[in-house]
Image (cartoon, rainbow, N blue to C red; front, side, top):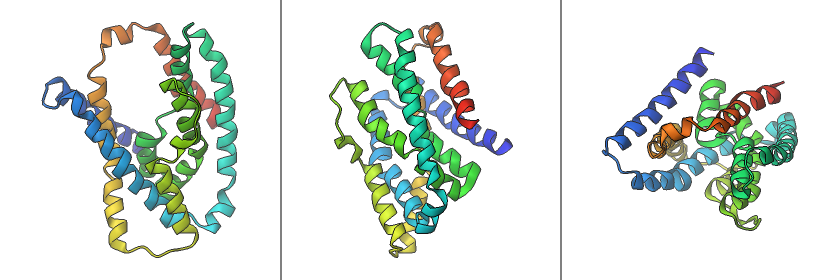
Length: 236
């Protein structure tokens, strides 16, 4: 518990730093796409590739295949349940879609993965990535179509992180040798993911009106569901 608390505090500190520098105008919020681009196209793909290339083997699959089955079942149940519950939050379709997405999707990537590695180690990190695979497919298909008001498409699945996952899995399964310096580069890049993502989160949050945000009663219900009730039920 202490390890988990320490990691949450560290990430929170980076988020607070991003908030402060944005509020003080040391960094302009329109610069946030630069950090986002680095996460999407460089840091996250390196992080995912390294994890799969090192640890995704036949032995791993044979001993852990049930993880993805549990995850698939959980995502399907959550998607169906939240599609129903979201109707009680707002009458407007797009707002309902936002509530539905927020209740189904946790911050499993930019915050969850660094947390899993810090608390559970490298094997726990791979388990987390495997567990989140069905969730990632939901995000880039159903989730993306709801948030962008576009039609359902599977093209978004082929994004940098997913491609890195497939390539890393291929390297791991066939035990293709990779120079140690390449792994060092990817490891150092991956270490940046948590801090940079939380700096970005702080910058983005700095644009919100907290008085309006905290006066919205539905936010507390969504927060309780997403951060307490759903995790407890999944944990059980």
